[in-house]
Length: 325
Length: 110
Image 1 (cartoon, rainbow over the protein chains, first blue to last red):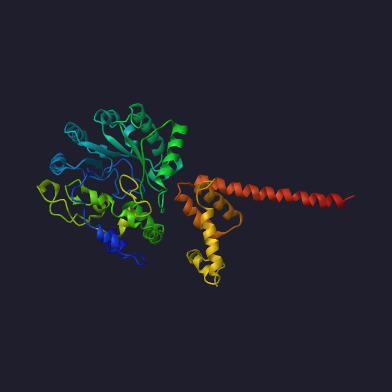
Image 2 (spheres, each protein chain N blue to C red; image 1 turned 90 degrees about the vertical axis):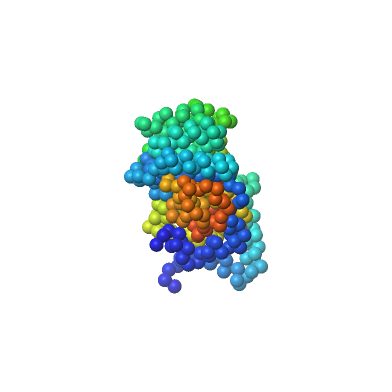
């Protein structure tokens, strides 16, 4: 049984797609701003909350040909932001070529980095490389304390992340206006994220006072009840409580700006999805083909909603760019 | 009744309004206002509530405010410091009452 099917069959959790607002905004916008591409599941970390269950033993990596197909579709359909995620994108050996090509074509490019990899042997050149190519970074840092981060991401990850952040700051990231460094918070368990603005103030003060680290914006993201986090919910007998919490916090005003309405996600093999969560669940987008044979197909489509989507509409809403409502 | 405290009762708290709705509505309005941002932030007030919940030993309030505080970005370390603040006052109050005993003893002893 897929994760989506299981979540869709939970008692006491109304079907997400049947909500009035979800019916009203069930289609994507006519033109899409973001193309998110998942260039591989390989990662140096095995974070407890990872929805794609990335890790060192995953073999899936996007090829150069698929990357080129993504860039062609990006330019021919008026996308504005290329959002590169993984796994750890740096573990795909073709990332540098992708970034250089995107930069040469003047594309606004975001890389989602786990920070810790930036101080590992073989990856030490990436901070300079990112700066040279004006890549915007969305960096995972799920809290401002060592204990909380290491509990979620592994021993030593907080310390490595701070070292990487200092390096990025020294290059101008998080300080110079054209080198954007945004941090990503996610809850360390079965609870919703705090108010993004208030949390950003705490992050800014703690990281500056204790570590001399600065950043641009903080994105507070809700944990989606799938992948490794879904497994945790199951194991810890938190699944029903968490799903009820998400459904009770459903914010109708967050539906219109759900990220799936404004993006197309491409998996490592070129398959198309509405978002990285649907990608992790194998819920392909309701449109034909892969990015390789995309041609001039319309991007307008009905979104493949499921009860996991409650994570994007709880409270202030949640997306890869933080709160939405 | 198998136990004096039942976790499911927390979600049934609203049933307390069934028998005296006017009083309940006043209480809830007051309660809601108390925990809004004011001279103290909502987070500071929630931490106070969490500490008091331990001092008055209310398992429902501890359950509720632990989740509330996690969702306000407060971590375990910060929450346990708040519990220590409550414990220090309870312990200090116990010791301070020792003065009563000392006064009684002083009066009675030769």
